[in-house]
Image (tube, rainbow, N blue to C red):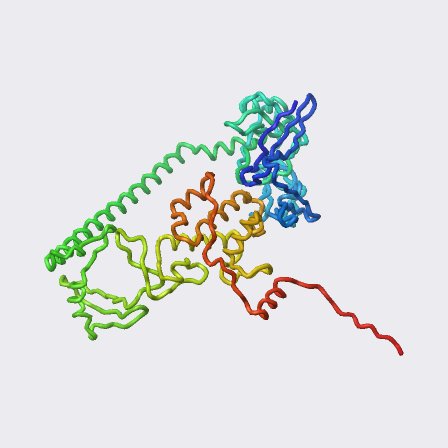
Length: 507
């Protein structure tokens, strides 16, 4: 009998848009065999996998335009990918030190070898099983299932029945759900030592057989005695009372502050009832008009000047209610900051400031800054993150374009996958990376009206709807470098292995 399931602990969404990884379970009257298979999803794309002698798995995609295989990603195995790294009844976690840990209620078989970081002997039970008088099961969460060389599958029984079946067989060491889809079904039983177990995100639950006496100790810790329950109630009540007192004190403080602010605002309103800018804004902050500040600082008198910092001098002053203040009078804008009216979508400036490589064309050339200028900068960041290269100073041996122009060329030549940096390994789906590049190119289009707004960008990145084709990006024209600089760049981008041998000959 053959049955096909999704491959255990593998998210097919992060594998590839070309194939899907499945698990094939073959059972008969004597044994269970487990295989995995790749189902082709898109036959128009060619991919191949290479397993290197060091154990690294590489994925290559065929680019028909250049007639070459392009490496898409490399999966480098960690320490826990070595088979049975921790021996029997132990869990491997490459992010911990030491990487191997015995199951609860188990101990190292050789404490000396364990202290020398040699875990191959594994772990043994602290208390032997007692099948005649009853055993129990210890639940391990989020692990990959052990080696199934000595296991048996029962497809049509529930997890409760699976537990009973394991208890009825003294040789059964563990059980788990066979098919985790739709709430789980079926049963998988083990009849030997449990080896090759890893602690992984999104793993399955494994129920390991232990002595009933050991399970009782675990349950006693999970269910406190009556005395412990009383202590817990007292502690919880004390914490709640303390928190209640703090909340009450905070409410009283806020009420007192609010009354003080209202009195302060009333004083300001008496001074200028017709000034609409006095009072509070939407965030609850007090707003003072220029007249109030001028009176408080004696019209920004030099005798009240405390000093001068970046972007303007600082003055001390005293409000009508006696409150002392310090005021910075801005002398110029900072960076690209602009004040927009409620119905404004763009503004102009006479002084261009900003970070080179991220400024939009309309801002860098004409001084026009709008919401779409930020979209352009975001698109540059997306392309930089995916490619692992900076837009400013980007160099390529085949052309003089910046990163945006390079991405645009690859898009038109249907070689977009070549833009993805190798450090983005197989944990990312190529389709997701290609979508990020597509959205990035939409954000850096030459004309502001062609770029999407940021809310649309969020939907594009998180959705699966089809996207419009991007138009030419801003700053697409090639940079013409001096011949000497161009030659030097090509030498830096290419490496030549050569050497000179001098031979001596007698006359």
